[in-house]
Image 1 (cartoon, rainbow, N blue to C red):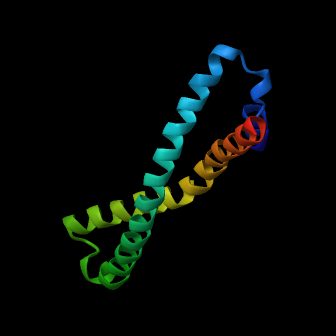
Image 2 (cartoon, rainbow, N blue to C red):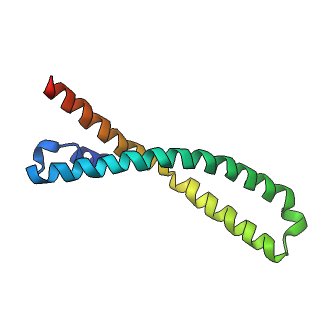
Image 3 (tube, rainbow, N blue to C red):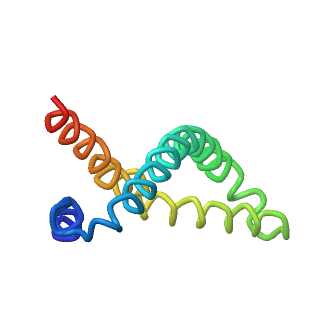
Length: 108
């Protein structure tokens, strides 16, 4: 992942016509990253509640139909946690701020 980020940060190697497209994509990424951070905070709280619910009811409801859906939801939550989307998006978001800082020093 670091090699891909290093490649992306080399703005001087981009064609002049592509820089505006890259800047637009990074702006969308910044907005999406902010939304993702808020959604992950809610997700973490709900994952804890689901985990506690699973812990408390697993023995009692193990063989019921609705409990299978609870277990399925718990598996999906675990998959999302293993993906760790925040640590995937944050380095890309950092690129946006690095390019802003670079532009400010050039404009001064």
